[in-house]
Every structure is written in structure tokens, then in C-alpha cells.
Length: 348
Image (cartoon, rainbow, N blue to C red; front, top):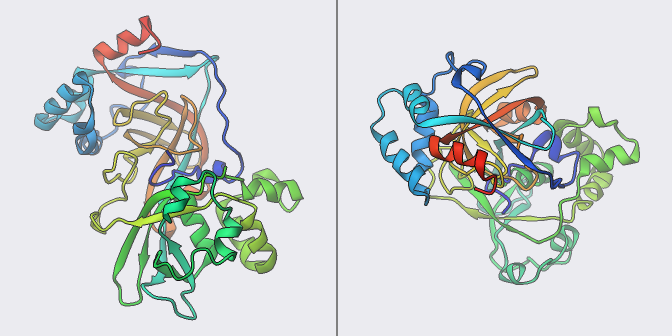
């Protein structure tokens, strides 16, 4: 599924379409001394995030560890005693690719006004039954959504609304200060088409120049051509109101629990179990050596060494996430018996 936060690859999702090579999966068990920065990290934050979702495991090994986690007094000792670090790769050893995602905050209204005239839509019933359903252009121009009570809120910026759909969740702040949170409810069944890649194809920008902010600014400077650029992406995301999550908590991830800034990461569940601790060694302008929890997924997050780090809510988090595209290494912490079983049977 496209994750609740759609984890939409921010820097990379703007540039590439989805593909995954089918190659042999390899496993290597490491020691905690092999993890760069392990002794300097405060794993208490990761333990709190782990407790938030570990009760959702069906596997008896993981559920047993969840019970122990509830009583653990020292986070580092807990992880070192019951887990083993496992480096997972496909074929030849590969560097990780880390991007960031965030929860946007848009300005909006519970009803339309001359300023707030771009609706956030619920998913119509027929869109669930017909796959693929209408394209983005058809949804927004044919009148098929009119007078059906499908609007959750209206916002003042169609570009921010487009990127809300890429992120898959966000908050809308009303003029009186009230806040409504929206989460991913489904999409129209059309494959995502990258508007960043389209700008590069046209020669507007080179690949290294494209980022979320660059695209937003170009669309705003060129409103007519910008609207057509957004229509280039046939995919369209629908939302639901997520009223059960307080505004001081993070948005819901793929495990239907709130995710945590800089402690939650989106992964490919084909390789990394959702809910598992993941050690991140990210290079780049903002190096990160930190234990996080795999609590989200993304349609563009594909591969054993591919992850999207949740950077938080609002413009500053979005600015950081929008420029993140860094190498490094990702290591999954597996229950001891599970870790050694992987060496004998890669299908486990």
C-alpha cells in the first residue's frame, strides 16, 4: 500500500519512477561494536517508539520481546541483549540511500471562500471499485466530485495540496487556530509520474537542480504551465480525517500508530519487518547515526538499503526533508534466533 504518510520519497520520488531489481538477498550478522556511533546514541527514544508498535506483531518471537520491552529499564542493554544487527543487501554490497519526509501544515478553511478554494477530497466509492479510475485531470476538471459532500477542507494553495498528496498526510490550520489532520485514504489507481523528471526531460532544470522547493517555485511563477505540469502526474490521492490523533502527536504511519520525529523510518517491508529497530548511518550535510524504528512504508521506498526518515511537521522539517538524498548504511536489528535463521534460510 502507499503509506499513510506516502513516504513519498521527497528528493528521489520527485525524480524517479518505481522499479525494483529482483536479485539475491544477502545477510551479514554484525556486532554492536560495528555500528558507528552506537555508544553515543540515546536509545531511550527508540525504545519508546518501539513500544508504540511492537504490540502489533503477530510473530511470537517479536511479541515476547515486546513484553520484555515494557519492563526494560535500560534501552541500550535491552537491544544489545535480545537483538543482533543484520546487514541486508541485494547482490553486491550497496550503499544505502536515505531521503526524508515530513508532515505538511497547510492553511485552510472548513468551507470554501475566495481564498480557500482548493478542496481536499475524500475517496468516492466508485474509485475503490474501478481500477484505474479517472486521471488527476479528469478528477479536477470534469465536475465528477461536485455537490457530493466529499470535501474535508479547502486550502489556499494548489501546489501545497499536490505535495500533501505526495506526503500522504498533513495538518490543515483554520483561520481561528483550529487544526484538522488528514491521512491517506486511497488513490485512483494510476501510476505516479514524476513532475521533477518531466522538468528535467524538458530541459528546464538539470537533475541535480531539482528539489521540492524548486518545483513549487517554478509552478507558482508559471501558473498556466504549472497547472499542466501537475496534470502530468495522473495519480491522485484521497484523504480521510484523522481525528483520533492529537495534534501534538505525529501522523499515523503504516502500522496505524503515530510516528516519531527522527525515530521513525519508512522502509521496504519486503526486506525489513515493520516494527523492527533499524540502525541508521546517514552521511551528507546532516550526518545521522541513530537507532530508529521501521514504522512506515512508501510506494517509492524499494530495496534492502533504502529508507525515508520522518523529519517532523511544518515548513522547516519540509525544507530539510526536501533536500535530503544521502548515502550511508542501514542495519536491521533482529531477534537473535531470527537473525541466525536468516543465514540458513533466506526465505525466512
